[in-house]
Length: 187
Image 1 (cartoon, rainbow, N blue to C red):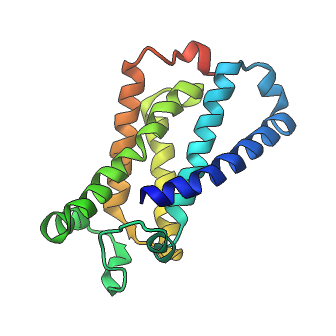
Image 2: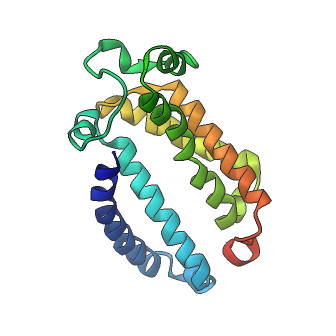
Image 3: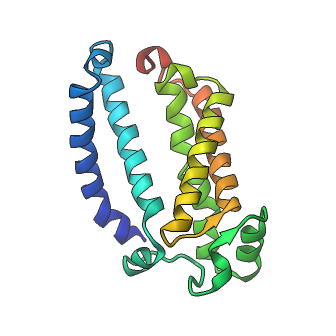
C-alpha cells in the first residue's frame, strides 16, 4: 500500500498544485487579494489532500490490488459490494479478517477523514461550527460511498460512520489546537 501511495502522490500533488494555482488566479482572484501567504499554503495543502483522497477513494479495487494495496476482503464475493447494516463489516473484520485488513478498514477510514475535520473550520468561516461541518462531510462521504458502488468498490455504511467519526475527531482537535489560528487562516 505504501508503494502505491508513494507512486501516485507526486502525480496528484503536481496536478493539484497547477489546478489550484490556475483556479485561484483565474476564478477566485478577488478572494485571493484578501488572503495571505499562510492561508494560501494551507489551502493548497487542503486542496491537494482532497484531490489525493478523491483519487484514492474512487479508484477501483482491481487497480488498487494491482498497485499492491491489501484490501483485506475477497472482492470476488457477491455480498461485499453493498452493506447497509451498521457495524456488519466491522464485526466481520473483527471475527474473520486479518489484523492488517482490520486496521486498514477501521482505523484507515477514521484517519483519512481527520485532516478534513481539522482544516475545514480553520479555513472556512461558514464552517466554523460543528453542525455545518458535519453536514457537509455527511453528504460528501455519502456521495463518495455511492460513487464507490459504481466504480467497482464497496458502498458500506460502516465506512461512512467511520469517516464521520474521523471528521468529528478532526473538528474537536481543531478547536483544541493553537497552532493554526482562525484569525490568520480563515476568511
